[in-house]
Length: 152
Image 1 (cartoon, rainbow, N blue to C red):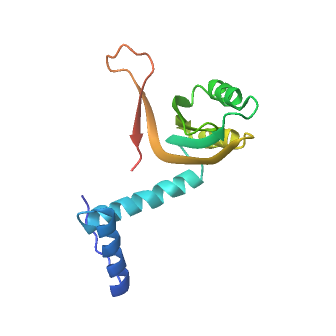
Image 2: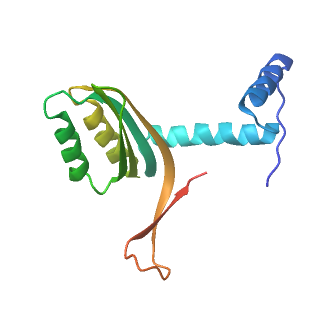
């Protein structure tokens, strides 16, 4: 680990310590590491660089004509991005779907936009985490064994 020292105005230090308590951090270093990671990862995602793992969550009205079929068709058309999907019935009309995605940031974002823009989909949100995707063969029976390692 590398150490560095920062100086903060008393009010900013007080607010930071309050943030630490509210979030359950045990020390300032852990909180700073997470804030730095968040900033660096956010910058990388904004530039559409590299790969990511992501969750795409959205609520939709299952009564909308052919919407479920269009969403499923889009997932099949992008099967290389779609790892898994979970479907939950919220009430008589609304469903929540959460899809786990992995791939290039730009393609994941385009796919998410395509799903969220479907007529009848609402409250869509994409959460991405930058990763390095490594294809590896270290004795497993799977040909395309993939590791997704966080970038920071």
